[in-house]
Image 1 (cartoon, rainbow, N blue to C red):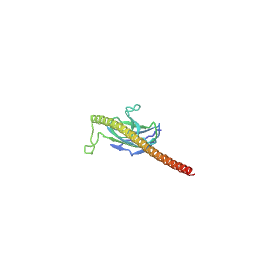
Image 2 (image 1 turned 90 degrees about the vertical axis):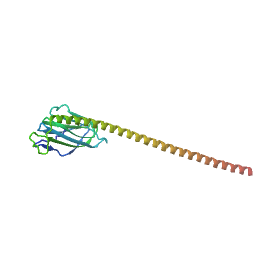
Image 3 (image 1 turned 45 degrees about the vertical axis):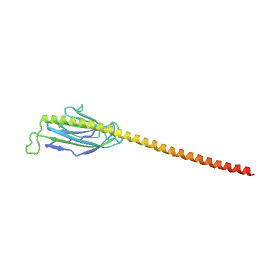
Image 4 (image 1 turned 30 degrees about the horizontal axis):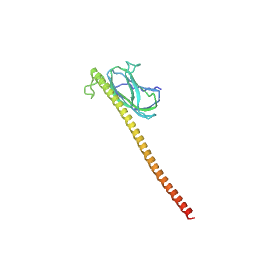
Length: 213
């Protein structure tokens, strides 16, 4: 299933309202923004609210006007993201999400800021050079890589924590079973001894009666 969300820039800034959509397993949802300025910044934020398999990860690709067939940015297995990148080429940018395993509920917000050439110096905005755009993009890629590594570490920590919890539960179950078995064995021994004593007493009484007769 493909979904289209177009936002065009008629002023120096334009922002979209956050949307929530269902990403079905095996399907792809694409959202589009169009920039009319050659010096724009695109910011996006998404988070997975719920997953049918109780996981919160999703895959997504970003396509630019210069790369409409090959993704310029690709991320895999991330529960959320919040990034900004330079969009020096005017045209359509596509954000495509997909989940190969199970359904996901995703919140998404995309904002486009165009730093036009005709902005006044006192307008509260400032011009950013192409070099700063590239530096910001490189910094964003570095931070994105760090976020991926932290996500992997978090997943590993959660895995080991869950495994430790299961091992602890297994040990507690075995310990409880050993205690119950020990108590049952002790009660059995006491019961056997008590019954044996009753039988011995009964046999003694019978023998005494036989001798008395």
